[in-house]
Image 1 (cartoon, rainbow, N blue to C red):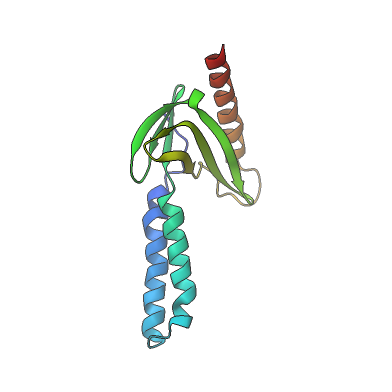
Image 2 (cartoon, rainbow, N blue to C red; image 1 turned 135 degrees about the vertical axis):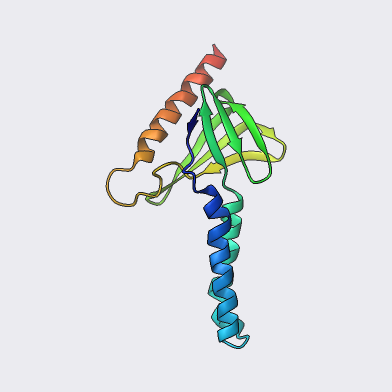
Length: 144
């Protein structure tokens, strides 16, 4: 089984929002309750909490993706997956669309290994090409 996600999903789900929440609380204390000075930290907390809750941990097991999200864990065949998006500026954020909903989940988002490399060659580019080829082969085999 090959891990596709960067292994830092828990960090992005918990530590980063906690950091901005702490900055907001300290800002409120130091400013004696002036919400305007703590507002950037509050907004960043809300965004990072929302962003982190949408991330999943993803492994590739042959022609099946194993997904562990914040609310559910499931397996889905590659033939039921579409690679919708891979970039977020220079950084990588993979978005996989599912042909069939799994509960309420229609898309799986994850940060790939090496996806946060800003300068130089990015290892996530090779992962993107490999995943796209595997998905294409699995979907072609399903149609045949």
